[in-house]
Image (cartoon, rainbow, N blue to C red):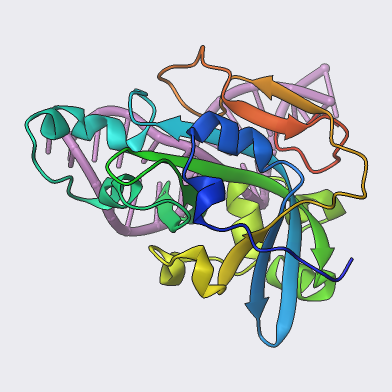
Length: 207
DNA sequence: ACGAGGATGCTCT
DNA sequence: GAGCATCCTCGTG
């Protein structure tokens, strides 16, 4: 497959949970050092405005008072289809895409991808790993493998520095499963994690 | 195979 | 000062 179809703002300007599910099987693309790095998205999570685990949730009272959102989560209230990238645990950049219409907060975290193009460059960006799947089977791992960091925070995907393309329609549809989200302590009962049941690149996988 | 613990810096209270 | 949307190493069995 060499042809990638850009997913525009209309794709992302929808219900966050639906976008999270629909992103399974789509392609995350970054043109880096004259090479195309491509990963097939196999795991996502939805974060919504009325969601205690969401960065934008703490701004709820502010919104209700009609105040403009501030801080890192402000971007989640903006237009859909923008990169929302933040540092967690002081070390790892996590890549999200904003969702919903302007004024409504939402984002989808990309938690794992299967390498598709640029494997040699990805391996050079993850020099210590022993198992191939450790290249990109986690949200912090995939940003390392694909050279994604704070430089791209706030960029519209339409700039096509980092962007997302539709899944391969000739391929078999992925079997999508759900679970509670990983690594959070609030709203742990929401099944807003989606993953391709047959992928070897799921985070928190057995063996 | 599995679990505990350390690294490390930003955001919010 | 606490709490993280994590990853890696090094114990133990």
